[in-house]
Amino acid sequence: MLKSGDKAPALSLVDQHGKNVSLKDFAKRKVLLYFFPKADTPGCTVQSCLLRDIKKEIGTTAIVGVSPDEPAKQHKFDKKYRLGFTLLADTDHKVAKAYKVWKKKSMYGREYMGIERSAFLIDGKGKILDAWYKISPKDTPTSLLEALEK
Image (cartoon, rainbow, N blue to C red; front, side, top):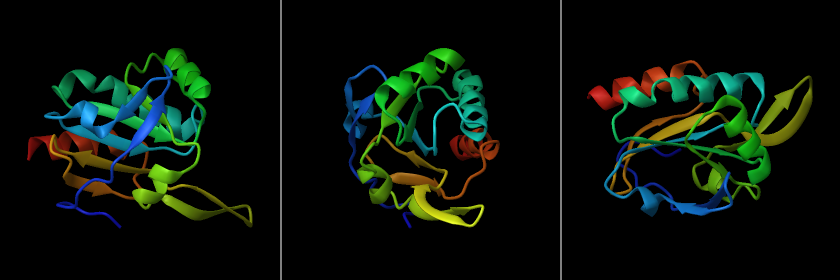
């Protein structure tokens, strides 16, 4: 698992508008990189909308969501809930694996691979300031606000 002080794994993914995005695009800014299982599902919607609702409280910190969804689905999700921040399509799970959030999961006795809801606060130089694995949707914005106050 990644922890505070580790270098954040590089990423280069397509966003909901079809544009390539990397962590370097946010140089000199903090970034909340959060991984969610699937766009427009109950938990992911709560998490994303709560993050949208605190945007004015986090200054220049960027919010970036990552899920295995295609860019078109991310775009629909962004538009439907007026999220207004970057959503990245990790369709091959390469970035999720690098951040150690692609895990074996189980539901109703069926095992499958999927995203473990997690979030990382990364500084402008690419260093992880905080890492939250298995974070609940409602705790994500609270954890971010608390970390930014340190």
